Image 1: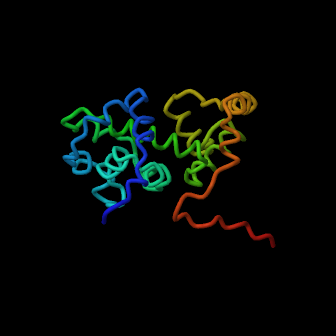
Image 2: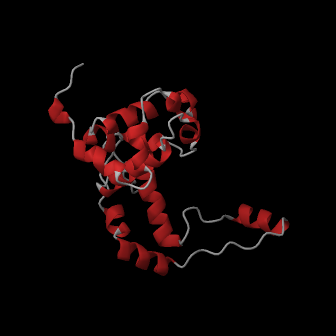
Image 3: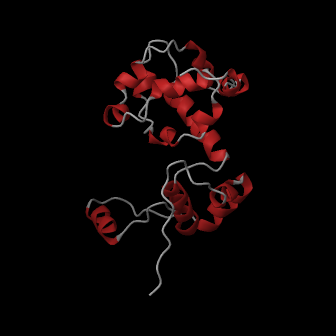
Length: 181
């Protein structure tokens, strides 16, 4: 399929290459080592690091930043370790996730985790079984961060607004509302 050059935005490529690790983007010659060694790609071909890098190189901002596939990356850094050109693929994908987040495009489960952090001071509060095991192993009690401090920080950074203004990621099922009895 031939694509129109109007779909390509060199400013997007420059935006990525100006980031700390993004400068390595231009070293990519599309050998596909990143996809070949990626554990996620092995089980889910929708996540293709080589294709993500290609779309970034071609300046396809919307196709890249608005894609739900970037969120499949587990940030294991295997692609970065194996790249023969030293492209920091995982770091570039983190940058793409950051851009996506700034547009309010991130998975619903991350929004729920952020809400839990604001409410409890932890994403996954410890339950009785975990606390009991920690005590038996002689491990220290895990203290929750004070939620007020977290809310202050998120307000200062604008993260609280980001959480509130999340948009559904493409292909995401609508959230089911709780049914009251």
